[in-house]
Image 1 (cartoon, rainbow, N blue to C red):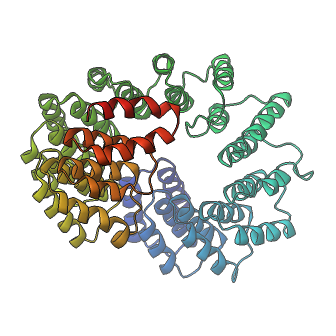
Image 2: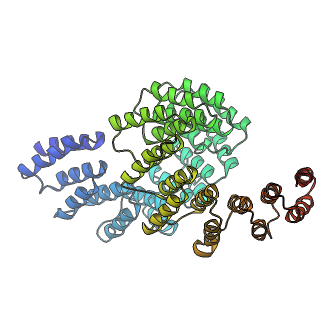
Image 3: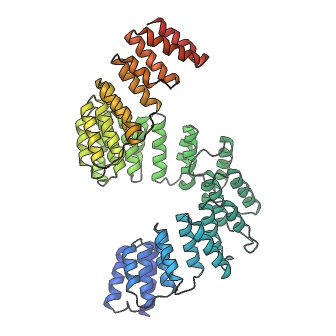
Length: 514
């Protein structure tokens, strides 16, 4: 009786992830000498695995004198559930030496193949499941569909879906298949399956529409999105946060911010993603004051994304007062923010003109990503501190962080603001020669502007010798006007005229001013 009760309580703790209670029950089992019982050990292992405590779960697994199929299944399922598919598959292979898998183990192993995109092993497991007659079990079939879809093998997934041994696909099967087709850019196929679902008399749920709409990409035309929205309204699904959030993202992609706002207001229980979406919308349409107002109205705890968004709003408003208010709130309520929030704080103080606070925050960051370095380099570059920007670049290389095209654009900006033409040339030349990064139009324009304002127009012309780009050529022609260089100006104007009628008017205007 005691064993049964303890097993029941541990099962409950695993379901609701009651960590303290479950750990106390484990301690009680040790005191009562019950850990020799395989069933109790399985319950303890399952509790730790379901709660994501994989180390103590595996420790229990290793210490067990007798393991059965339930033991292996709980351990494999735990690793699969918490994003360790390779470890789950390693255990699956070891288990096969001792036990024949059941439907639950097959499902977990196939889900792990889906997560790791391992189609070869997935097909082998499919063959084994067929031999053991598990391909008529709905959740095994669902895992098969997921595995093939995730591996990009949509035809195989649809073959499993429509297999005659699995006569009536469930709504879950439809949802997995529709989501997989949309993720693989087979939008029309996804819509066809949605129509079949309706014909069979199945009622789509929030997961169906989330799968159809994708992850918020503008996959369909606006008319299709509006039709799907109407269907959601009829079923009362537009007021649920899960599907409403995707709709908001889609309307934002079409720049229909008012429609997005209507969806936001219709959601009954808004989660943090709902609030983040509306804050992002405010920032995208430059209504930064509204973004800050929404933050104050939030009735759920903000997360890192929320704070990064509102700090960006404060930066764009150049309001250090608002920025400090958000910073203070962060310190009080969210002391362990991630690196993205740290970057947003550095950017906010820099854009508000407080370069000292920006640098102090950067120095205190325990983790610095490429974005962190680019942000602080840009801060000093835009404030005319080219030498400090270059020094930070050297520090960045010493820290083992590889620069990207944005890094070099900020360095060129720093040189441009300080008139360091030779340093700018060196930075530009090192992009492709040392780091294998092809300079973009913005890099060339920045260098041309730097050399042009330094009166080194012939050198600037060398850099654009093979670039017939209107923006780059126009940049050099403007520099020729500033320096009064008719020779280079005429050559560049002729090249601009050759680009076509859209470019033909402005070169003559600039030439007349030389």
